[in-house]
Length: 187
Image (cartoon, rainbow, N blue to C red):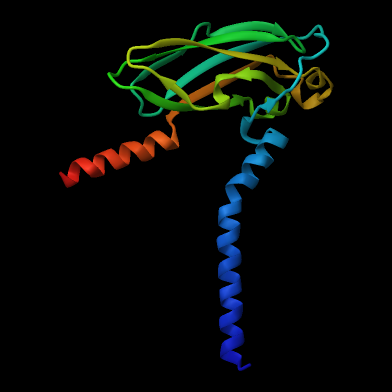
């Protein structure tokens, strides 16, 4: 093989490798965040803790909407609980439009260092939700703060955790909306 063929093959291999890494980046990053709690990513628990410890923690609730015709708010802006105690909270969503809305909620907690210790047992954020026109729905979230947080000295200053959700248009609905706009332009 001549030198140009080797250089071309190497460039192609590097290009294909970079393309593969680009497609793998989001799943790898999402997995990293779930495992480490990076960026305030919470954990998903499969079972409730066995008991609470005598360490109070205030949980604050935040709700945001990104470009959707819905009202979204927590039913309570704060709940006082104990580390290790299973807690239930509700958010309320109202579709203010005249058509169904399919949305998904992203979430995080602050301070970010509390993310690995904030565990959800049940959450409306685990899947896309469809809200009928004018519909109001209460959405539960069941969670606990892992008692292992009490052993982490860097978290001694954490007396409050904010759980924040943002509703976005789901990818499927966004694709359908873009297709509908394109179809209307062609008419």
